[in-house]
Image (cartoon, one colour):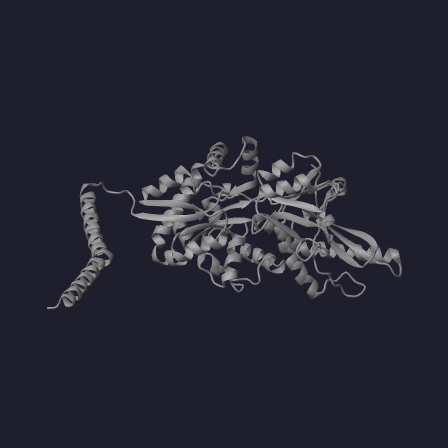
Length: 507
């Protein structure tokens, strides 16, 4: 063989050898190493399995939450211990109140349960045009912890908000936004801008806006405790409306993935059982305050003892018996969950908070009562008390005259037969809806004022206006509105119309 051929063959073999080495290094060696690594891991696992104890947990679950103090029981040692007795370990996943992210996690199975404000649940479902989760309990209702605060000089009452330049400074997609929408929906604020909300990223940003404001500012600060208390340290500010004045709007719920509920309803029942047993251990105010203060440390929330007292006063945690009542499982004078969803949906749609009701008016699609029904059938925690709304007492004429005006309700104009105080069928329908609105605002008195037309006999017109106001009150009484909270009167000469004005006794 010639020398050139020998060299060529050598190069070929060297090339093949190089390719072989490359294949080994790039493919075969890593594959071999991976197989050896897997084999080693499997051996280690077998040793670990053979030498470990028996876990007390058969279920590892997760619940979506944020730092709101109303969820303190979900994060409590008592709840953790109760779950452990059922072999359940549940991680609390804080998403900083990103409700879209929370729903994503529910749909993907990353979490199985979540705390959801009722309004946020409706909005997220509306955006997705589906109902991936359902409510199984009501956690709490805000009754004073959210408030609309303004300078007394600029905004003495709700009616004074009715101006194009008014701006509500608030955190978007929060209970504060819902509070603002409820006020916009129920009061006559027709001159507001189409969207009067100035949305900021945090309650601290609201405080920053307040520090830049003056007593003549057009800004109204809508936030929650403990930030409300910080604003009210300035005596020039006051609360226009807070969530203690209405009911059935700012409500937190515990929801569950429908997929998980269908597969694991008995397990869901154990979780709800554990939650309400835990809630019952914190029924004493001192224990609840201790929990809230410890929870604030856990969530890195600054909370003083005084602020904790205000917060506890402003949140009504719902016990088992109250949940039975709200879900229609026992007869009590409380708002049914179906009506809560209807009220909130109406406010959100009419005020532009969501494009449409995701349930199509069938609000029973968004709650599941069989979990609570199962608890009730076992006579679970029967000694808990269902708290009722405080009935307004009858007032003297002097007290009626001293009422502090709150605002004028938004009510379509009533129609009467010409020259009479006879209500038309259309007006009766309006008042039917009006009665429901009054049940949403149980803390206020109602002055029904009949205003007279300016033409003709003034005295006769005022007399007719007074009779129309009286007829309106009588019809509202027939619908169950307490007589003690209403008073009719003749108003002014000008426009022939019945007005509905809410007021409260001075502090």
